[in-house]
Length: 250
Image 1 (tube, rainbow, N blue to C red):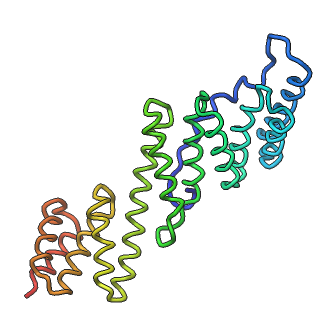
Image 2: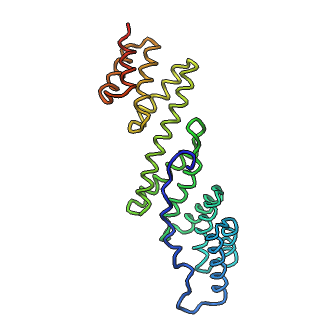
Image 3: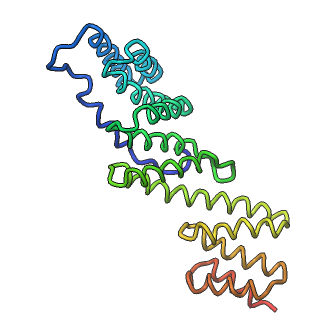
């Protein structure tokens, strides 16, 4: 989510180091060829030639599908596509890895990287948020399926940021409706924030906007209730002070 959210460094790919070292046991010519291709792809990756790296990792799997390097290459190919910002290709490769190798030792990282692919595509809050929701869902899977993995903590942190972003989207749309005097539509958006995203940074303004709209609609009792909630929970907030002025007007 480069345009909006701080992204923690990728902490995965534990399997990279040492994967391409020489093995002690004898290997046949096909495995040597597969290992050579893998090392070549890995060199491309280190040189930031991500497209070439992805293509070469894919070649390992195509030419040596039964070698031990083929499985490694599937995930490395996805990572190379991710680094090249070809997120659709990366997600497709990750979905394939997850489907074919559900018991692999790096499966938690595959789910995590898929979430990051969506996360990096999150749009500004005023735009459509499908990638945001996909990122949230995927990180939820990481936490649910791999709670003790090294990726769960980072996934949880990103989910908190995503919730704030989704709340911001609701606020942006709500303000648009409010400016156009579509009060019920605006109220629905602000109420989504107060009902669903109560722990986000958007909650204070959302409560104030509810007070504002209820006042405009002449629903003074509802406005007073919301103002009391805002004042009780955020007594020093500028939104609380503004809301108090609204309900005190005769």
